[in-house]
Amino acid sequence: MTDQPQASSAFSAWILAIRVPTLTAAVVPVVVGTAVAARSGMAHWLAALAALVGGLLIQIGTNLVNDVDDYERGADTAERQGPTRVIQAGLLSPREVRLAAWLAFAAAALVGMYLCVRGGWPIMLVGIAAILSGLAYTGGPWPLGYNGLGDVFVFIFFGLVAVVATFYVQAGTVTDAALAAAIPVGALATAILVVNNVRDCDTDRAAGKHTLAVRLGQSAGRLEYVALVLLAYAVPAVLWARGAAVWILLPWVTVPWAFGLARLMVTCQEGARFNRALRSTARLHAAFGALFAVGLLA
Image (cartoon, rainbow, N blue to C red; front, top):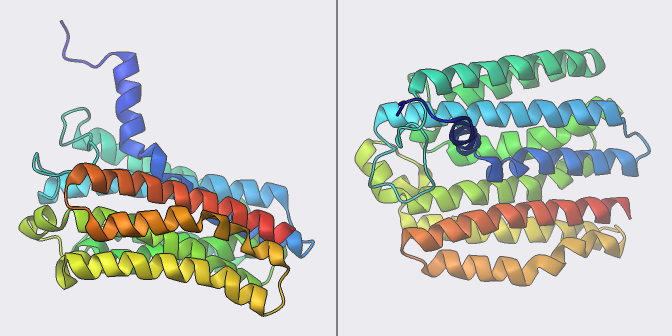
């Protein structure tokens, strides 16, 4: 028998490496930002598609770099309770994963050239900052995720920047509506990360990974999750109170789901339940974003 993986197993390893279930975090901001642009009559579908592809590539690159750096820094061990990490599991080598990360970032830069033509130097700066932050999330001399800034990174780049930049490359401007629409998107994307960090508190602490949950404690991390969910659902209510049509409240149909997840996060202790909360929070983020986009258009 050969030590080389078969085609199907190699493909499965790369699917694990890029963390496909999490990629909705890059899709939702583009959907919401495009909905805001369409509501204003300024949608540009080719620019929206380019923003989607670019966002997915940056997230894939960030996920791959995260896998390499966490493995090399000792954060991914056999004691970790989360989903399989391909390098720690021996499915792919650090060299393979790092090379794939660089290819993803390079492809994102190529897509970004078109977006820069449409949006000019502001979009160029945003693209450079997004790629550098993706590399610095777990890499470099002062990794963001290891120093309690991972939550801030996700809220800014998977919420504010992603939604507003998507709107900007289509409309050529920034509006209060785009900024407001970015807040719940960023809040729920950050909530996904919080589940991960609360679950991994013990192993992260042992590896010297000082996430916000490690710095403040698991209880504070659970409260952060609840606060982020409440913030997400408050935004449609505020927009409705300020004159938006009642359709803006469409995401509220998922409130029972969100309430159940918040209760799960407050009470769960073992890894399996945290992993269930992680998957379900990612799905909630996607469902909320889709309903929010429909509400904006309606």
